[in-house]
Image 1 (cartoon, rainbow, N blue to C red):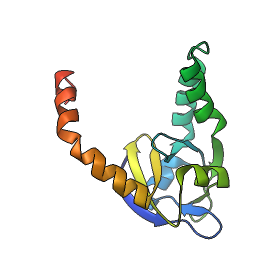
Image 2 (spheres, rainbow, N blue to C red):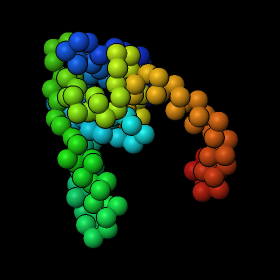
Image 3 (cartoon, helix red, strand yellow):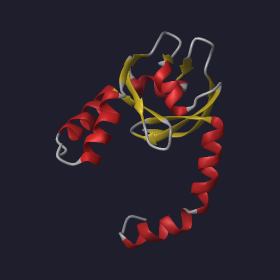
Image 4 (cartoon, rainbow, N blue to C red):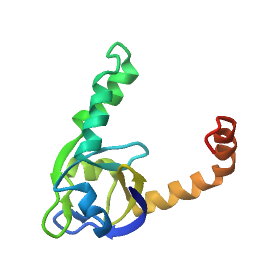
Length: 144
């Protein structure tokens, strides 16, 4: 399980270290793709295969569905974890997420999100304000 928030830097060669405690679970090859809110997401291969299978079964007759599937699948790339636990972030994904030098890696149970640190701080500040309202809605659904 991936949980927690970790601050790292991207080096001059666009390499980013995966937190040491997650490296074994990520494996030697993972998938990096665009995510929501201008972030990236890193999936272990098994998790990616399950998600990609679900996406491939969505109806192609709906333009929103087609767009989302294209973003997730065409925007994806497999990445190797090097001997120092780093992944190489392609330029197109680095640009999409607005990644500069300082990034946050957020553990989200079955995946890791990668955010530019400034964007993460702003997102987190805004989302935390809505937490009581969201918890109320989740309570109505019997989830929280």
